[in-house]
Structures are given as C-alpha cells and as structure tokens.
Amino acid sequence: MSHPKGLYLLFVTEMSERFSYYGMRALLTLYMVSALFSMDGASQVYGTFTSLVYLTPLIGGYIADRYWGNRRSILTGGSFMAIGQLLLFFSACAIHPSIHEEGGMIDASVDNSLSIILMMCGLGLLIIGNGFFKPNIVTMVGDLYEPNDRRKDSAFTIFYMGVNVGALFAPLVCGLFEGDIFDPGRFKWGFLIACIVITTSMLIFYLFKSTYLVTPEGRQIGLAPVTTSQSKEQADHQPLTRKDYRHMLVIVILSLFVISFWAAYEQAGVSLTFFTDQQTDRVFFGWEMPTSWFQSFPAFFCVALAPVMSWMWPKLGKYEPHPVNKLAIGLLLLSISYFIISMGVKDVPVGVRVSFLWITSLYFIQTVGELALSPIGLSLVNKLAPRRFASLMMGIWYLSTSVSNYLAGQLSTLYPDGSSAPKSILGYEITTLNEFFFLFVIMSGIASLLLFALSPVIKKMMED
Ligand code: GLN
Image (cartoon, rainbow, N blue to C red; front, top):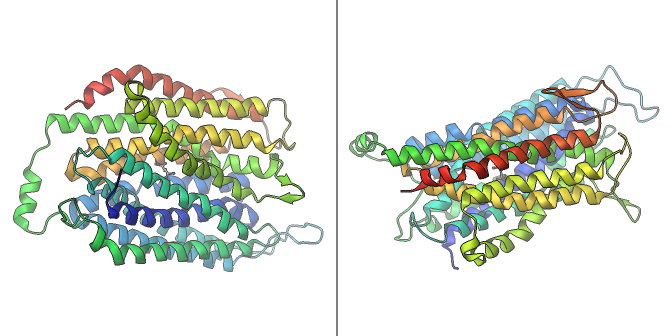
C-alpha cells in the first residue's frame, strides 16, 4: 500500500516532537524529586502538567480551524515548545543539590526557588505549544487523503509508529543524563537535547511543508481556512446537519470511555516509574539499567507490533472487529495487564525488588491494547468529524487524555510507600502494591464491558 510523501514528512515532524516531549517527560519526575519536591509533590506537578498539555489542544484546534490553519499552528506550537525546553535546561543549570554527599544530611540553606520558577515557566510554554501542535498535525494526516480513502487506518498506524519511534529513543538518549540527589544539575543535558530536537523538527517542517503537504489533486493543505470575508461568511452560515451532530456525539462518548485507558496507561511516568526505580530488580550481569529506560518499553513494543497489528486486522476478514469494539478490546487488555502485575507483586512487601519481567509483561499487554485503541481512535475521529471542525474534534479526543493525565497523577499518590497511613479511594483501602494495581484492573475492566454493551447503539449512531 503506497502513501503520499506528505505522510512521511508528518511522520518525521511528529517523531522528533514526541522525542522531545517524552525525553523531557522521562526525566521530569526524577528531576523534581532529586532536589525540588517530595514524591507526592512531584506526582501532583507531573499530573497537572501532563493534564494541561492535553487540555490546550482544544484551543489550538479551534484557532486552527477558524483562523490560522494547521501549518501556522504547528510552527507556532513547536517554537513555544523549543523555548519551554530551553527554560527547563536553564532550570537544571541553576539547581543545587540539597543533600550533602558525605553523611547524607539535608542542607536547609539551599534555595532552589529559581529552578522551580524556571521549570514552571518552561512547563507553561510546553503546555501552550502542545495545544497548537498536537491536534493539527493529526488532522493533516487525514487531509492528505480523500475523505473515504481506504488507506486512512493504515496511514494513522504508520503515523502512530512515528510517535513511538520518538518515544522509544527519547528516554534512552535523555536517560543517559539522569542525575540524582547528589548531582541534580546533570539533568540539564537531557533537557538541552530535547530542545535541539524540537527545533530541528520545526526546521524540517518549515522547509518541506509546501512541497509535500498537498491533497491527491495537488492542492496545498493546512492553510488558513478562509481568505476572503465573503467565503468566511459562507462558511459560518453553512449549518451542521443532524448527522454531523450525531457523529460529534459519538466522538464525545468514545472520548469519555478512553479516559480510564489513559489514566492507567499514564502511570508509566509516575507510580510505575517509582515502582521500577525502587521495587524492580534492574541489575543485569552487574550493570544497572537506568529507571527512565523502562519508559521506552511501551514504545518499543508499539513500534514492533504496529506492523503486525495493521497486517492482522484485515486478515481477520469478516471477524475483524468494528472500530468501537477494537477500543473495547484495548480497554480489556489494559485491565488484564494490571491483573497480571497485581498477581506478581502479591505478598511482596514495600521496598523489596521483584523481577523486571512483571513490569515488562504489563507494558507488553498494555501496548497491544494501545494499538487497538489509539490509532484506531484517531482515524475514527478524523472520519467522523465535520471538516470545518476537524482539529477542534481532535482537541476533544485529546481532552480525554487531559482528564486521564490529571487522574493518573492523583491515582499515583495512592502508591503505597510504606511510610504513611493506608490510603483510600471511594472506600477502597490501599496498603499493598497488589491493591494499588488492582484498582486499574477494576477501572478499565468496567469501562471495557460497558463499551461492549453499548457498541450496538454507538454503531447505529455512526451510520450515514
Ligand atoms: N502516546 C501517544 C502520543 O503521545 C498517545 C497520546 C494520547 O492520546 N494519550 O501521541
């Protein structure tokens, strides 16, 4: 199946942007706990940040659909992100260790407030930047094709591989610069690399956009939506049909369901990072693998499995599940992945390390679920959204990730650290790791069953 060259330009642009995002993200919690915040505090900041990062696509999508078009939005967003990464670099340049290397005493005279301020400003710019970037690059993937082109699902899966090639290498490269409580300044190099990569991404996009981002007939895509005031008026008065509203409602309903998926999935950056750091045996033949490298596992599985999955779906012929059921399968697999790890850590006390195979099998099964849910979801949103709200509706889809990431940070604070009183949520008490992981089994298990049950109704709503 051949694809337009524009897909590969978007692939490279997204790959480098995701490299920069995930590279920074792999270091962020570790950076914060090294000298700025407690584990709970770091979870809160991380959760709020990753939630806001996915809230702004709503605004970025709206502004692009109405005023700027996708191209200008992507370039603006990318530039904001480059400056944001630079501020994180400055933050880590200004940081001081707060623990004495000899004796491990806390030094009360250390003031890291400048680093905190620089970090917060940097995160703020990343939040705004992502809002302009994310929904718009995805919309452009769909726009390279005719609305009913059969290659769209495959295009989104290829694009999703780009996301994950970036996410795969980022923690490996940036993770080489993991600092610690004695040397928190070392994190700066990771942030600097993230800055250089997003800047390169923007240059590539800027240089090649006019050549490759065209429709099959050669018309430029992603330009500002209207040029004359007359056509603007026409666009404003073209009413949405009942079908349009029905399709938009489907996008909203599905977005609600995927909240529980990403809330569990995104534990990777928080509680699962703590789990890997403190409770997973990471020593192989005398060498200790950096914690942040484990964040590459889902991306690695994604890149390896994406071709298999996109080959497998059509092979199933009449047994190929409907896209809505694929989303439900994704949720079910997530539930199973947490079930397995919850069994693995049963009766393991806080502080004792377990085999790396537990976290690895969680990431493996979760990723099969991700491939059933995420690229299929993007493609669905692109096909269902009315053209002139294409990026805005993508923003709605990402809104669910925003809610999830916020929840992920909150839920991560329930991670049993052994030091405090039992934690509880909705009457469910958590004292052991097993109980903590089981929470996610319940959450995504219920969502999956409910979506299977509702799928006949949703399928009807999707009809033309
Ligand atoms: N991992 C994907 C990305 O970064 C999916 C994000 C999401 O929708 N939650 O693009």
